[in-house]
Length: 123
Image 1 (cartoon, rainbow, N blue to C red):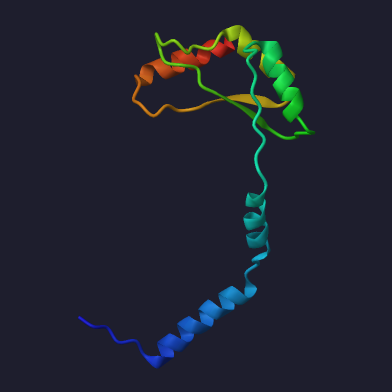
Image 2 (tube, rainbow, N blue to C red; image 1 turned 45 degrees about the horizontal axis):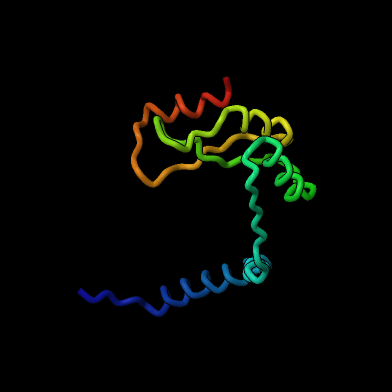
C-alpha cells in the first residue's frame, strides 16, 4: 500500500525540521571529535601493594575533584585473583570522595556470590 503525502503536510514537517536545526547548539560536536587526537597515558607497576597503588595514584592525580570511582575486579569465589583486603583498605582512604566500583565479568557467576565477595571490602 502506497501512502501519499500532501504538499501542505510536507511543508509543515519540513518547516518544523528546519526550525529545530536552526535553534540547536552544535558547539560540542567539534570538541568531541578533537578529543580523539591525543594518545592516552598508561601507567604500570609491578609493586602490587597499597604503597605501589598510591605511587601510581600520585602520578595520575592532577587536581581531580568531584566523585572518584575506584574500579576493581574483586575476583570470583574460589578463584586465583582475589584482591587482598589490605590492598583496598590501604588505597581508598587516600583517595578523597571515592567509591569502590566493581567491574563485571564476561562469564556467568552465581548471583548470590557477588554481594558476599564485594562486601568483604567494607568489613
